[in-house]
Image (cartoon, rainbow, N blue to C red; front, side, top):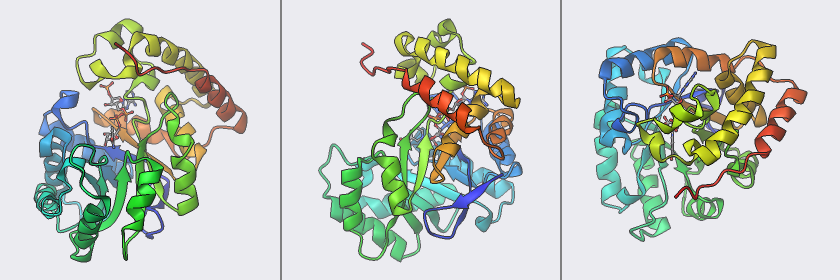
Length: 316
Ligand SMILES: NC(=O)c1ccc[n+]([C@@H]2O[C@H](COP(=O)([O-])OP(=O)(O)OC[C@H]3O[C@@H](n4cnc5c(N)ncnc54)[C@H](OP(=O)(O)O)[C@@H]3O)[C@@H](O)[C@H]2O)c1
């Protein structure tokens, strides 16, 4: 495993993070035993950074993760837990309430990294009011570090300015070879400000592994039913990109998933892909994305092939 630092906290995190959204009905996965085996495998291969959220399975993902870590006898300082508070839970009264429940599900005294999952679009909570409520959670030791997920850079900047003593240490955004909007603002902002950039859907929810044909992709019965990348208009382009990924992977003896993740890691040293897995063997395969680098020429070929994609989100 390769390691890096969470922001400039000095906290050592693995270069790949395990995503625990998979432990939820969104992915049709409610089997605790399977979740535990995935967590166990991640720890075994050196992953110490795990991402969950209060909303995943309405607490189920946090609960499975907390229970698994406890049953596996993982010491608290052996793992860095990131969880997320939804934008709807950001009134100053709800922030401590939500954190208390999260701590109980995670079976811990403190959350290593708490990110706001998305901006409070519906309730008009004032930015500085909720940011100060989060800072108080750090002051009292319930949370160690703060971050923002799915925030535009302008709003992240405004939120940051509300903090008196703390600073953000991480941003979380969608970033994968087929969906590269984070490049314009988020990645340079993270680089300039010493923030970790947690890249979600780094495999495009599995699309970039190339394991589904166009017909199979259309038959998926989970969260991907409504995912733009799996719409035939987009997915046919993704399959063309996967051909290039596979060809390059063959040179290195690497699978498409390993190549797609390596491309992200090579892009910037602030990027930490959060990879979801539905089995221990996927975790094992994904960890093969670290410990080597694509050549500049191959990295560029993928860059160019992926820039040919024109993904649309207008799918109906
Ligand atoms: N902040 C946010 O708004 C946000 C949004 C989304 C996700 N996230 C976080 O990011 C994490 C990852 O994102 P994601 O779940 O959307 O997508 P992802 O990591 O791109 O894709 C995960 C899916 O790809 C497939 N897969 C994984 N490894 C594979 C391998 N080696 N070979 C073949 N297939 C493989 C699995 O599905 P199948 O086996 O079923 O194909 C798995 O469920 C989540 O768990 C969550 O923690 C955050």
